[in-house]
Length: 462
Image (cartoon, rainbow, N blue to C red; front, side):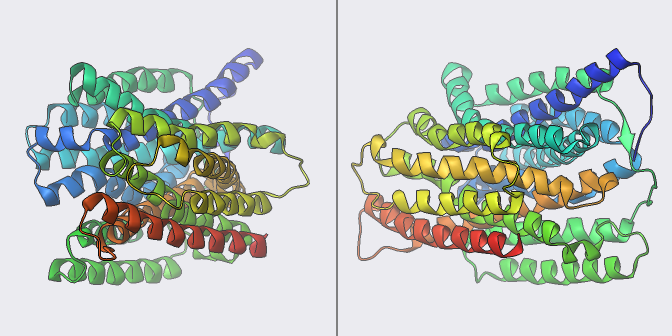
């Protein structure tokens, strides 16, 4: 791995600071944008004239762009320049945010959110790769990846709050104008201040692998998204079948290529297994159920969207703090062991949330949100570390892309799973609020079991 320029000492210090600050800022913005519609779904759906099925896409379309593009842009960044792909991602976020803000109907809005997802993928995958390159020292890298992981929690905390506030001030479109405006200085600063880096050996474009992976992941997430309207529908089953075929072809292609997009031999590494399984578990067992809590607080507990977002920020805010402080933990504690502890705390926190019922006060949720927040932050920091450390040093962006692909694919599956359980378990209740809280309690148990299973895997693979 090489840096293309050899700057003077003062320039190296400034560029090293930029290599941490700009990826951290990009991650914060990407996660704020990812979670912003949680608090404004009703207003946004009305604004783009979205029906019941379209509302699902309004909420989920960004995940499609994210998961489909993450691994591809990470590999492209390693080969063609991480700074270059980062800047392209920031510019794409400007354009796609403007498109969402001006969208006259649901199809245009959904397409804009898909592109926002791909743009965010470029920022997330390359950002962590830039940090990994800029900080080869283990202690400095732990600090850098911890800060990056902390931005995940802070973005989740601030996104719904900011969008709810801006919606109250000037309507739901104002968030997207703000996101576009914030992306402009990010692109300009990155073009000016980021050091360029790429792998010493360029592998070349694996077009068959790129296409089969992107199409396979897209088909899988489309099936998961549409499955909320009925898992037995022919189009849902057809998409699942297409996803299975395309992903099987991807594995076959990668196994035969001399220089694949994703080296399947990496899956023999315990660290890479931890990165993928841990990220997927975080998505399906933590992000899924926590994302759904805003809906529960709104519909069943009678909170406003803004109040629900602030309450959820107890979880995501503590996630930020815990990830930021994770570097202070004793060096003798391995990343795998700490990842297991983080997932186990998330499971305990979810179980502490049990007992949801209409009329609950917000403080009833605080103990569970606190415990789960600390666990989530610890897990985020460790996942960022193993994503970089589990792959060859010149493939840091690819490792980040693989890790985040697993995370956001898991998150899409988790949201669909929790939604299906929460709304599909009536237990003889006819009142919508009681049905929702009863189903959410069951979803919390399922999520806790999955998080505990992920923790056990982390302890065993450490």
